[in-house]
Image (cartoon, rainbow, N blue to C red; front, side, top):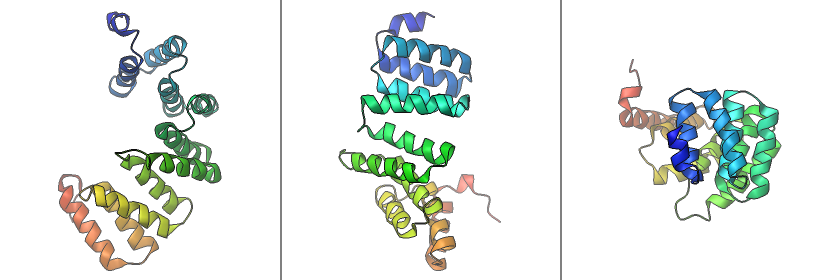
Length: 193
Protein backbone atom coordinates (compact mmCIF):
# COMPACT_ATOMS: atom_id res chain seq x y z
CA UNK A 1 0.00 0.00 0.00
CA UNK A 2 1.52 3.30 -1.15
CA UNK A 3 -0.06 5.27 1.72
CA UNK A 4 1.67 3.06 4.30
CA UNK A 5 5.01 3.28 2.50
CA UNK A 6 4.73 7.08 2.34
CA UNK A 7 3.88 7.42 6.04
CA UNK A 8 5.50 4.42 7.65
CA UNK A 9 7.76 6.58 9.81
CA UNK A 10 4.90 8.57 11.35
CA UNK A 11 3.19 6.55 14.07
CA UNK A 12 0.29 9.01 14.53
CA UNK A 13 -0.64 9.04 10.83
CA UNK A 14 -0.46 5.26 10.80
CA UNK A 15 -2.56 5.13 13.99
CA UNK A 16 -5.27 7.33 12.41
CA UNK A 17 -5.20 5.38 9.16
CA UNK A 18 -5.69 2.08 10.96
CA UNK A 19 -8.62 3.53 12.92
CA UNK A 20 -10.14 4.75 9.65
CA UNK A 21 -9.76 1.28 8.14
CA UNK A 22 -11.78 -0.52 10.76
CA UNK A 23 -14.17 2.20 11.87
CA UNK A 24 -15.12 3.66 8.49
CA UNK A 25 -14.26 0.92 6.05
CA UNK A 26 -15.07 -2.17 8.12
CA UNK A 27 -11.76 -3.74 7.09
CA UNK A 28 -10.92 -5.43 10.39
CA UNK A 29 -8.55 -8.06 9.06
CA UNK A 30 -6.50 -5.43 7.22
CA UNK A 31 -6.51 -3.27 10.34
CA UNK A 32 -5.40 -6.21 12.47
CA UNK A 33 -2.46 -6.89 10.14
CA UNK A 34 -1.51 -3.21 10.13
CA UNK A 35 -1.74 -3.01 13.93
CA UNK A 36 0.70 -5.90 14.23
CA UNK A 37 3.10 -4.24 11.75
CA UNK A 38 2.76 -0.88 13.47
CA UNK A 39 3.45 -2.38 16.90
CA UNK A 40 6.52 -4.11 15.50
CA UNK A 41 7.73 -0.88 13.89
CA UNK A 42 6.77 1.37 16.85
CA UNK A 43 7.07 -0.89 19.91
CA UNK A 44 7.07 2.13 22.25
CA UNK A 45 3.93 3.74 20.83
CA UNK A 46 1.63 3.22 23.78
CA UNK A 47 -1.28 4.82 21.88
CA UNK A 48 -1.09 2.29 19.04
CA UNK A 49 -0.91 -0.49 21.62
CA UNK A 50 -3.86 0.96 23.56
CA UNK A 51 -5.89 1.32 20.36
CA UNK A 52 -5.06 -2.26 19.42
CA UNK A 53 -6.30 -3.43 22.81
CA UNK A 54 -9.61 -1.63 22.26
CA UNK A 55 -9.80 -3.02 18.73
CA UNK A 56 -9.22 -6.60 19.93
CA UNK A 57 -11.97 -6.30 22.50
CA UNK A 58 -14.49 -4.43 20.35
CA UNK A 59 -14.04 -6.17 17.00
CA UNK A 60 -12.62 -9.60 17.78
CA UNK A 61 -14.04 -9.97 21.30
CA UNK A 62 -10.64 -11.25 22.43
CA UNK A 63 -10.71 -9.78 25.92
CA UNK A 64 -7.79 -11.81 27.25
CA UNK A 65 -5.41 -10.54 24.59
CA UNK A 66 -6.92 -7.05 24.87
CA UNK A 67 -6.19 -7.09 28.60
CA UNK A 68 -2.55 -7.98 27.90
CA UNK A 69 -2.18 -5.08 25.45
CA UNK A 70 -3.83 -2.61 27.82
CA UNK A 71 -1.34 -3.68 30.49
CA UNK A 72 1.55 -3.23 28.03
CA UNK A 73 0.37 0.29 27.23
CA UNK A 74 0.04 1.07 30.94
CA UNK A 75 3.54 -0.24 31.61
CA UNK A 76 4.80 2.30 29.07
CA UNK A 77 2.75 5.20 30.36
CA UNK A 78 0.80 4.61 33.55
CA UNK A 79 -0.36 8.23 33.76
CA UNK A 80 -1.88 8.75 30.32
CA UNK A 81 -5.51 9.69 30.80
CA UNK A 82 -6.72 8.04 27.58
CA UNK A 83 -5.14 4.69 28.42
CA UNK A 84 -6.43 4.83 31.99
CA UNK A 85 -9.91 5.76 30.74
CA UNK A 86 -10.08 3.05 28.10
CA UNK A 87 -8.81 0.42 30.50
CA UNK A 88 -11.40 1.50 33.09
CA UNK A 89 -14.14 1.19 30.45
CA UNK A 90 -12.80 -2.22 29.46
CA UNK A 91 -12.69 -3.44 33.05
CA UNK A 92 -16.21 -2.21 33.69
CA UNK A 93 -17.89 -3.23 30.44
CA UNK A 94 -16.03 -6.37 29.42
CA UNK A 95 -14.61 -7.78 32.64
CA UNK A 96 -17.34 -6.67 35.05
CA UNK A 97 -14.68 -5.71 37.59
CA UNK A 98 -16.18 -2.59 39.16
CA UNK A 99 -13.57 -2.40 41.94
CA UNK A 100 -10.60 -2.28 39.58
CA UNK A 101 -12.53 -0.18 37.05
CA UNK A 102 -13.24 2.40 39.76
CA UNK A 103 -9.54 2.54 40.60
CA UNK A 104 -8.63 3.24 36.97
CA UNK A 105 -11.46 5.75 36.48
CA UNK A 106 -10.19 7.65 39.52
CA UNK A 107 -6.66 7.65 38.10
CA UNK A 108 -7.98 8.87 34.74
CA UNK A 109 -9.94 11.66 36.46
CA UNK A 110 -6.85 12.64 38.46
CA UNK A 111 -4.74 12.83 35.28
CA UNK A 112 -7.57 14.60 33.45
CA UNK A 113 -7.51 17.32 36.10
CA UNK A 114 -3.87 18.08 35.26
CA UNK A 115 -4.71 19.07 31.67
CA UNK A 116 -5.61 22.56 30.53
CA UNK A 117 -8.50 21.11 28.54
CA UNK A 118 -10.23 18.31 30.41
CA UNK A 119 -11.63 15.41 28.41
CA UNK A 120 -15.37 15.52 29.07
CA UNK A 121 -15.81 11.94 27.87
CA UNK A 122 -13.73 10.69 30.80
CA UNK A 123 -15.84 12.64 33.29
CA UNK A 124 -19.08 11.53 31.63
CA UNK A 125 -18.10 7.86 31.54
CA UNK A 126 -17.10 7.97 35.19
CA UNK A 127 -20.45 9.62 36.00
CA UNK A 128 -22.28 6.81 34.21
CA UNK A 129 -20.14 4.25 36.04
CA UNK A 130 -20.88 5.89 39.39
CA UNK A 131 -24.60 5.86 38.61
CA UNK A 132 -24.92 2.38 37.08
CA UNK A 133 -22.25 0.29 38.79
CA UNK A 134 -21.50 1.96 42.11
CA UNK A 135 -24.95 3.44 42.83
CA UNK A 136 -23.06 6.51 44.02
CA UNK A 137 -25.68 8.98 42.92
CA UNK A 138 -24.26 12.11 44.59
CA UNK A 139 -20.91 11.49 42.85
CA UNK A 140 -22.65 10.90 39.52
CA UNK A 141 -24.61 14.13 39.94
CA UNK A 142 -21.43 16.06 40.72
CA UNK A 143 -19.74 14.69 37.61
CA UNK A 144 -22.70 15.34 35.30
CA UNK A 145 -23.10 18.91 36.54
CA UNK A 146 -19.36 19.50 36.03
CA UNK A 147 -19.67 18.42 32.41
CA UNK A 148 -22.80 20.53 31.90
CA UNK A 149 -20.91 23.60 33.12
CA UNK A 150 -18.55 23.14 30.16
CA UNK A 151 -21.03 21.66 27.67
CA UNK A 152 -24.48 22.98 28.69
CA UNK A 153 -26.08 21.95 25.39
CA UNK A 154 -24.83 18.37 25.32
CA UNK A 155 -28.06 16.42 24.88
CA UNK A 156 -26.51 13.08 25.89
CA UNK A 157 -25.32 14.48 29.23
CA UNK A 158 -28.64 16.25 29.76
CA UNK A 159 -30.45 12.96 29.14
CA UNK A 160 -28.16 10.98 31.46
CA UNK A 161 -28.50 13.62 34.15
CA UNK A 162 -32.29 13.65 33.73
CA UNK A 163 -32.32 9.87 34.13
CA UNK A 164 -30.28 10.15 37.32
CA UNK A 165 -32.58 12.83 38.71
CA UNK A 166 -35.72 10.89 37.80
CA UNK A 167 -34.82 7.29 38.60
CA UNK A 168 -32.39 7.62 41.47
CA UNK A 169 -32.79 11.01 43.12
CA UNK A 170 -36.58 11.33 42.64
CA UNK A 171 -36.20 14.98 41.66
CA UNK A 172 -38.98 14.84 39.09
CA UNK A 173 -39.30 18.58 38.50
CA UNK A 174 -35.61 19.06 37.71
CA UNK A 175 -35.58 15.81 35.72
CA UNK A 176 -38.42 17.09 33.56
CA UNK A 177 -36.47 20.30 32.87
CA UNK A 178 -33.39 18.35 31.85
CA UNK A 179 -35.35 16.04 29.52
CA UNK A 180 -37.03 19.05 27.89
CA UNK A 181 -33.70 20.81 27.47
CA UNK A 182 -32.16 17.65 25.94
CA UNK A 183 -35.03 17.48 23.45
CA UNK A 184 -34.63 21.16 22.58
CA UNK A 185 -30.90 20.74 22.02
CA UNK A 186 -31.24 17.64 19.88
CA UNK A 187 -34.76 17.67 18.52
CA UNK A 188 -33.75 15.76 15.38
CA UNK A 189 -32.92 12.68 17.46
CA UNK A 190 -35.97 12.65 19.68
CA UNK A 191 -39.34 11.40 18.56
CA UNK A 192 -41.91 13.57 20.27
CA UNK A 193 -45.15 11.92 21.30
